Length: 90
Length: 454
Image 1 (cartoon, rainbow over the protein chains, first blue to last red):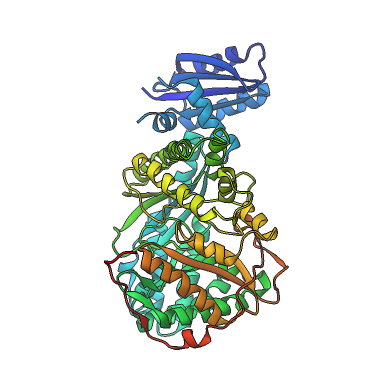
Image 2: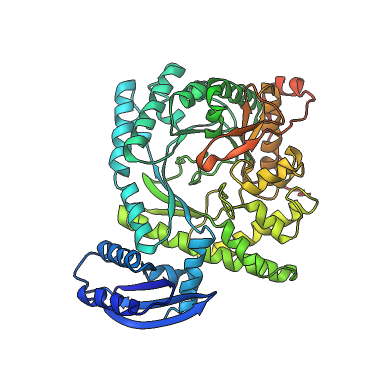
């Protein structure tokens, strides 16, 4: 299991989740969990995904998420889950 | 499972509060580059650095991408060059050749600084040590990325006052040789007492002789994160204040630990230490001074500043120690003037003086740092400033340092611009009374007694 956290930050719009899910499914990345919230007026979504069987390199997947974010006028970022585990779990 | 609120918190720290890993510094042992022939010595130094650090910058970038955390600097520290070049160098000019070799390697590898153009002379100077020290002005004028440091004392050995006197002259000469760049050479020169072997921060980083062939040390940062956390507990008691700093320092340090381990694994080099320092930058919201003001001071420099800084420094250590398996380096709050917008503002509004900064260095790392002083300050006065700071370190068993910049042709009221992370600085007044006779004595100040602590 290679867990990646995909976050989406920006104004809420139709189809964002669909586009992100399509990209992930095209790359054979499995979605484990999705949660979303509105904080300080911003739409936040966080997905926990498993990239163990991803068909492209981690580097490329992160680049593609970033590019999709730019296309949709929102911020989409993938990060290895370890940074959150390290910071928030002892 | 990680909670969305935790994800948002981490990313807010990175995006709005300037959380970053300040530096990944690779320490490289050069002792086996010693040779009687200078050309061969330089060649070995160059090849060793290039072979050991060839993947450092690329690995740093990969880690940044993977975790979404900026790693501001990738740097190298090497064995003190006075030891490495001692056999080959007959003159100061020979040592400058080694400095140029280091600079070339740094440029080709894409690291912004290489530290270790250093001499450890806490008790006495060898011939090679003195040649290196005398070569520093020329070496720093001719190179761009080389950083120099000299350790002039320690709690165990006392202070080498001959070296203190010499360094006053060397700092002055370095300022003169780089006068066209407002004395920029002095921004790359640190005089230490109790210098640590594993410090990842420039300009004082070197790879001590107690270290392995190569090691990865990481310096974390995050003054902005601490400031933002403290904004939420305004008016609360010291207990709440201290808990908040500790929790924040823990989180910041965990990121450093993660990055250090990952970098060490990927590079096949042992992980050394995480340095817990709060390192400010000139960016707005990345200031140690602003934290002190958030704690409750109208301006840094006001009465209470030393106590607030002591508290901050101690809580950062308490929070950080548990977050990392090995802590080392300088580990404390840095209070450089030119690199911290809050400090610059405090000096400009007349709230912060050299004497108050000296008091502050008693309770935090590292010392009088990045302070611009008038160009007509005498070498003896600079030595006096070094001696005072080194005495604080010696007696209190802590690292202290001096990095002052005499700006030739400028005086109090003027400002100097160093650019980038080095920032800009108003020139600060220095006490005008002389310590010439004190510095002229020569010899050593004996090591202090280690009991009867008061």
